[in-house]
Image 1 (cartoon, one colour):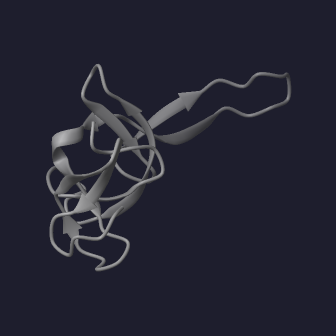
Image 2 (cartoon, helix red, strand yellow; image 1 turned 60 degrees about the vertical axis):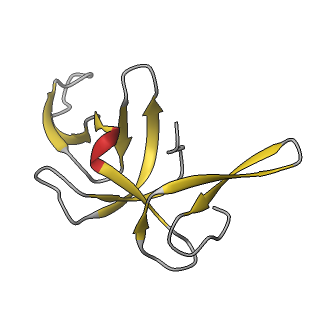
Length: 101
C-alpha cells in the first residue's frame, strides 16, 4: 500500500474532489482510508448522562484509496508514488520531482 497514516493527500474523485487532507487511518484489506475533514457524515449521539443534551456530530467515513494521490512535500503537487531501492531499503518517491517521500 502506497499511502500511509499521516500522509497529505489530494482527493481526485467524489463529492470532495479537489480538497486536501491528512490520512487518519488506512484499511489495506478493504482498500479504504479515512481522511481528516473529507467524506463527512452526520451521526446522532444520544445523551450519556441525565441533564446532558443529545447532539449531531460530523464524523469522517472511509472511502476508496483509488480516489486519492499523495501530495509531494517538496514540489507540493499531487503525484503518483514510485519506489526507490537502496541496498536492502525500499523507499517511496515522488514520480514528478524524484524526491524521497
